[in-house]
Amino acid sequence: MSDIKFTIRNLPPDVVFLTFELNGIMEPTELALINPPDVVTIGLSGKGVILSGRGPIWLYGYLIHFYHPAKFVATHDPRFNGAIVVESHTPDIQIGDVVEIPKDIYV
Image (cartoon, rainbow, N blue to C red; front, side):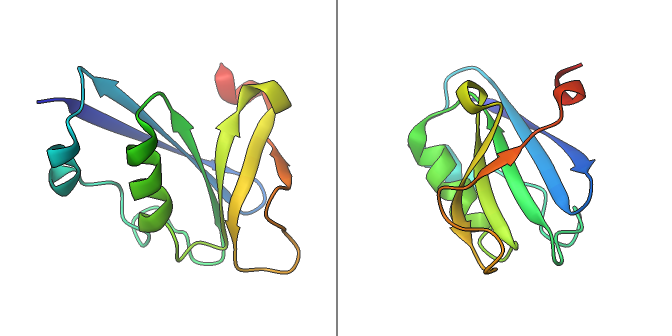
């Protein structure tokens, strides 16, 4: 069984940067057992969420669905120095947009 650790960082003006780290190999049956930080806990009301971490694509699918209530959901892609929007509930941010991530986030 894998252990998963979530870390939350608020980015101005209205983005939550959520990283995850797996300790071991995660099995699909473990999806039902993980507890990502809930939307209220991380203050997602009116905010977007950026997901970042190394994990299987089905874990990303689960997390994208879990954070569906957010203003938008994006996945971190270091090749673009940002995150690619994969879901949006606002006309200001379109699917495929790149949300810039401050360079100091990696420090």
